[in-house]
Each structure stands twice: as C-alpha cells, then as structure tokens.
Amino acid sequence: MRKRGPDGYHPLRSLMVALDGLADTVVARRAPRRTIRCKDLDGPANLAWAALDCLERRTGQALPLSIEIDKRIPAQAGLGGGSSDAAAALSAADRLYGLDLGQPALEATAAEVGSDVPFFVRGGAQWATGRGERLAPARPPAFAAVIARPAARLSTAAVYDAFDRLPRPAAADDSEAPDMPSLASWVRNDLWSSAVGLAPEVARVARALRAAGAEATLLCGSGACVAGLCADRAAAGRVHAALEIDEAWVVAPAA
Image 1 (cartoon, rainbow, N blue to C red):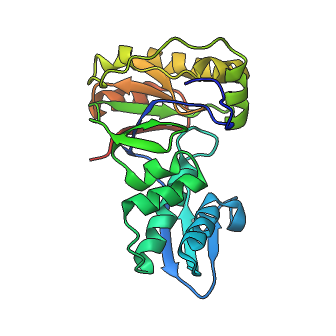
Image 2 (image 1 turned 180 degrees about the vertical axis):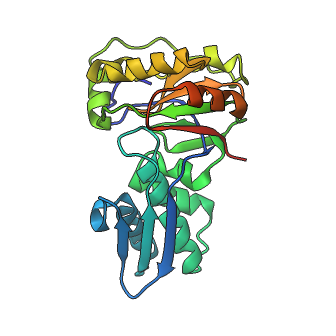
C-alpha cells in the first residue's frame, strides 16, 4: 500500500481470494420496477442499487429487478459484503436481460461502482493493483481460516486517513503466495497499524485467535474483522471451537 495519490486513491497490490464459508444470498428477478430489500439497507442506500444505475447508463436501457439480499457478511468488517452483492446484481441483470456483455464490460462497469467490485465479478484468486480494479490471475494458496469479528466497527475512510498519517511501510514481498505453513510468515496488511490505532479491540481479537491455535493473524481489508490462518479446515474448526468470540466463521478458498 502507498499513500494517497493525486487521484484521491491509494495505490495497492493485494492478493484477493474468494472464500467459502460466509456468504450473502442474493435473489434477483425481472420486475416492472426496481426494488432492493435488505435488512437495514433497502433501496438506493444499497450498493447494488448504484451498480444497476451504472449498468443502465452503460447499456442505455432500463433493467428493473426485484432483488432480495439475505445478509450474513457483516458490514464494516473488511470482507467486501456490499461489493459482492453489487457484483451479484450486475451479473444477475446481465443474465436475466440477456445482455451478454462479457467479462471485460462487466468488470469495467463494476469498477465504476467500487474498487473491489471487479474482483467479486471475476472471483477466484487475483492480484489486485491500481486502486484495486486491475486484476491478474493468481494461484490460490492452500489454507483455511477463522474470521472473527470484534465489537468495534471501522470506517474504511477513517482507516485510510490514519494510514496516511503513519510512516510509509516497507516494500512488500512480491513473490507468489506459498501454502501453509509458509503463508503464515508471508502475509501482511499495511492497514494493520492504522486499524489498531482506531480500534485497539482488533489487536485483542488477533491475540485471542493466536491463543486459540491460529498460526498467524491478518486484518481483513480495512477491518474490523481479523482472520486467524490455519493449515486446513480441521485445524480451523479446532480454533473456532476454542475461541470465545460470538461472531466467528470457518472459511477456506472457494473451489
């Protein structure tokens, strides 16, 4: 991660991996008018609404959908829940209206919605660069994890602002991500210090994960969730069982 550039964005290089074990359910249908139902985030407040606005501008046609979102991915957690729902809305509109836009056009539309939305259109494992919208395929490392959510909530903007006030981080290891156990010493997130400075509970959750048996801990995105890395699902299950945190999930790279 580098400091904010003249365009207002932070240049980054990040390995992003789609995970199984924690997901929202998005159900979309063609409808006479657009509606989005989601607990605490209905209608235009939902990022999926903005995604459909962008797609309608690109295609020049109305694409009314009725969308229902069953939220399981927590907000302000660094897990891309809203972005993944927006990507699902784009893909659903493309399919239900037979647009056949193709992956490049869908990802370009997604980039107008948010920096990480193109990743959720593509999925898999990707190196994300630029502001996060430029993707290159990566080999997904073998691991499992326990994702734990602290009570604290973190604003993405606040975490990035705090990052800009800290010394510039050292250059990262640009090598391909290894499998566990080597992955434990390879991973890092340059937003860790700024997130912990704003919410010290994030560090306490990381310590709890290590005490429960995780081999390493990693801030998820800009926080506030923390991932405890494990060799496999069985090991992650043991960590989850030993962890005294209410909101925690066992995840692994999606097949």
